[in-house]
Length: 297
Image (tube, rainbow, N blue to C red; front, top):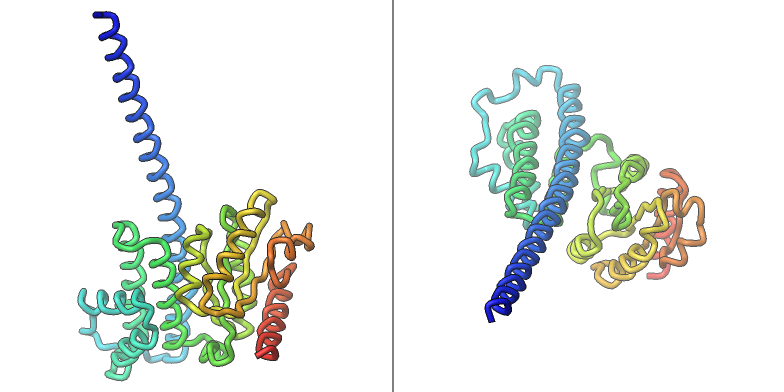
């Protein structure tokens, strides 16, 4: 009897240890997944500041040589103002967010002050909300992209950025789910911007995140970059899910990257509408797809 009791105790002990081990493994997996997504969100945040805010700051300096005399020295956004702008971009209300910022500009606040004291802190706030689990990855992505739209309307780099949505030239560029190579899409992004497109450049994300974005935001085109056979099946499923969830029933799907450059026939296999070998060709293909959609309508 004693030996049976000992055996039972041992089984319970082993089961408890096994459960603890499994919980620890799950905890570690969640930690590394969280850290990976956090790095992606932070990369998007830094890119927003470096490629959107800073260039516009330099342009405003160039266009206003005496800007140091125009800035209200006592102007500094309060916590309430930063929180309000952040709430507006998270609510996906670009018009309200732009109006909020533009009203301040019309009341005499210089662009420099708005960029440094309101928009940049709001971008950082989004990152902080992600790290503290107030927002998920998709919320941060949408919020930053909305903030970019406010930036471009407030302080366009060129005439091409003034009203890109008037002609339906709006694209989302991202890597195929599971593909961590994102440098190529940032190069392609520049070609689209120069052609007057409004571009959302989304860092590597899950299919569920992408589906959530396209179900909320309207895009004419979505471009996926893929560089290995290992992501082919998941990309095919993602393309189908994106088409089904998109708030644009005529959304066009494009693909690129070394996987499709080496095997262009795979574009049709995964359900894409077109394949582009480089950024220049991607813009040509995208505009052809948009024009074709207009003809069908």
